[in-house]
Image (cartoon, rainbow, N blue to C red; front, side, top):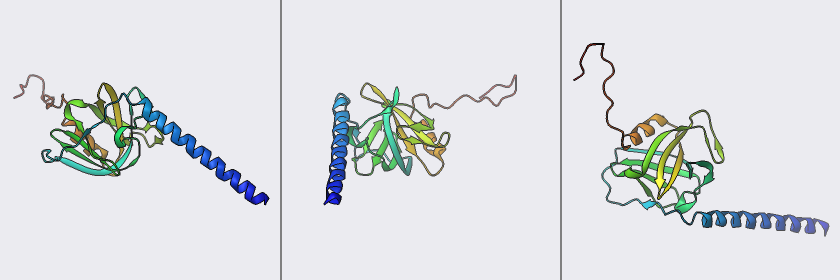
Length: 176
């Protein structure tokens, strides 16, 4: 009889912990109710110039990388396909509708070592900075291939992506 009581006590404890975690997740969602939903990826986008299957880690507020954004499928880690189109970057996260990070919303792209619940080797994460409404957010991705390829593809969409002037001239030589 004592075993059954101990087992029932553990079961109640686990149930209480689950309900507390669920309440915390819902509270986070309510606290982010002011954030707009990301734009759904339209089906009539121009052909993609780059596509990669990788791992979506998280999206967090840029000023606070420990504050996970949970709106419209951005709250859970999972496999994702990233596509770069002239209109922006499409994030197709498993289990969620694809979203479009519009070109005008992109702030920057680079590398990172950590974000909420994930620490990797130095510069092991890809960080895409963008604006969700009036809030700056960072999306973190993990690529088992060469992350530089993803970064280079997204960089082509940034406003200052114009080709840099040549700097490989000798003094006195004019560039064309």
